[in-house]
Image (cartoon, rainbow, N blue to C red):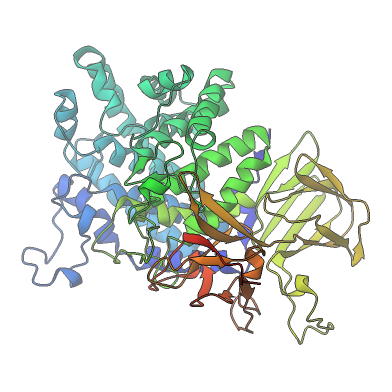
Length: 609
């Protein structure tokens, strides 16, 4: 079993992931405290000044859309905000966000006291009466889960003790409610989109050791989904994707804190049903219109409402659990594909705003949210997603005395214990003309994003285990202090390099290339990938890709341009050749307002060469 490196010991280095994180952080700082708390204030009876008459909502410092006071799901975003901000407090020592979080917690304390000392919500307690009466109400337990999660992270990562007091009081409310429902309507506990509650309460038990929280987790731990999975049934097809994934998180956390194998069996059964028994799009996404697609029918569901972002984020979190439990590189591969084609592709690189879905029909455009007028559920998972990168890069295998490098993201890991120091700095080793190194235009590796450099400073003996991505075309090239390793130690998809208690520089080149991904029920449609990165054609319709006897690399030719951003060379941009109408292909994550097509009809032409 792998263990995560302490979050405070990993930070991002310059690169595309840190740039996206910076945009996200600017958004977190931009949002007003009043807007974030507005619905909690209203429920507690706190009057916000100068809002009796609102002539221009845009300047009122209020949040609209799904956060509007007239929306039943109001208040869901605050918990996500607290989680994202707390993660940046621990990884970046972000004092500004720490101060903002502390103010919000103080204000929530006022709200809880005004509500009677236990209830702390952005809507009235009577919403839960509707659950008791089996009446429709839009997911109140979903909203409360986000708040519980956010306050837990504030306690864990932002070291705010008051957050735990608020949670303890709220838990007392839940203890009374669940006991009441056990008599009046046991089904009520399993309604209102309750999936995240198992993980939320069991995490609090893990953090505090207070059995009150474990007892609450157990009140939620017998949903019908588990029974179907254990019976080997397809428990997911045509069901709401994002309501089901948190139940798998709950089982994973229960396994983590109890060691009971039955929970791991449920988690693996969920993964099998969600991933192994059904196909994914080239991006890694597996749903349409928020629902799981039936196995082998992805092409039928191509449209404007593919790949809801919440599901991408939550499936990456599930893959991370399984990666730590098993060390199986398959989960690392899954995470990598979804980082590029979900986390990055569904965030506006300039504003940080999310797109709810990732359209995949020909001639699509991404629909971005506004800063304060929409607040779909995916706003919350997006602000959290952009803080997750540091925790996905490095893991420990204590038994093998190794550091596992799972994701190739520019970052730094620093640890010290008992006189042993370990510092690993990961970067993309792309060459500039003025790097005092001879530039060889024929040396592809010098212009490749997949030439990684690891600067190791240490006095400890350990092994570095590098995940070999599934897309690597041939054997990696590895040098240590500029001396190439002739014999590579490869086991179960990992490349092992022994570190002999001294500083060194490791360079690894992963040969990438272009590949095609086809749809199971539309094999004539193909998407183009470079390594794990989906390339989209800049066109308003499916113009087809015409092949002769060659492969995809005979159809697309790379375009390079010197830049002055994160990388000295433009990345992963191609131009078609010898097509009826040539076009540019670029990474899906770089597309903002351009019209694009992902899947193209494969055509043949005997004259093509």
